[in-house]
Length: 373
Image 1 (cartoon, rainbow, N blue to C red):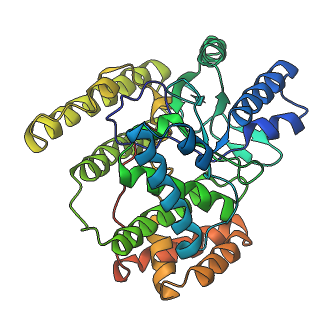
Image 2: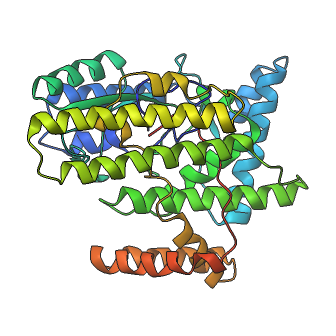
């Protein structure tokens, strides 16, 4: 899911797959108030779902709704028929939620660390954020964490998956997306239903991102669409690289053992450098494209950087794995499941070996994502 106020044109991920409502109901460590809030939010979402066929029949004079949901129906059928993704009611339903985001995620770190304050749930495992259906609740929780001296960041989320525990709907904010993004998010979220590994966000998101990217490539080919160059995807990759470079420098700084006062000054200097590097990229290479200005000029801290890199770290490894099985989806999913059965250390080594072979695999084209998570 996402960080606080990603502007609509920000090319970053806007979802993470976590059945927080159900998980919270089973988690004796969270407060009863939080249980009730999440349960009510999930219930409200389920209550307003309708089969897409019914929605289309009820609004025959709405061409935008007809086209967007019609495309979603086609992408949903393609996902199961051609990509081997679950064939269930998810994304065959629609929910008009009358708000721009379905959930707001709260990220938190120590002042001199990029390790997230984890939230652990029985089904989803441990994740790097806590979700709220009401932004006021997220802001209140963030204020309490800041009193502890933590860096915090809140981000709005347009879509998420319950990993098959419920029939997830197409949400009204998703209809604002372009055709590619609408189709690819359906592929991404269904991939989470196909396989999900507890306590390994980078593995889960990289796997789903590869399915999304390869699925979109096959969707284009099936529909006779050209693989047009996507300037937004290139900007997204370049911006993410800037942020990840800043993270690496901060990690080295926090491990340096400097006195806290000197570390605070150096931390701010790194954020100032990130802003300068961004302005150079924008003005010299993007012809002044300003889609990231709101994010970069807002307050910067460790927590705001957390969502970056979660989606792409192991995409080359999964691309290499897909090439090894000659693009056979069932065999690919079987190999992914086998990776999930390894110990953490063995899985890391296996992914590193695969990533090292990725130069011999077909490149996975980046897909634009709005927002961040």
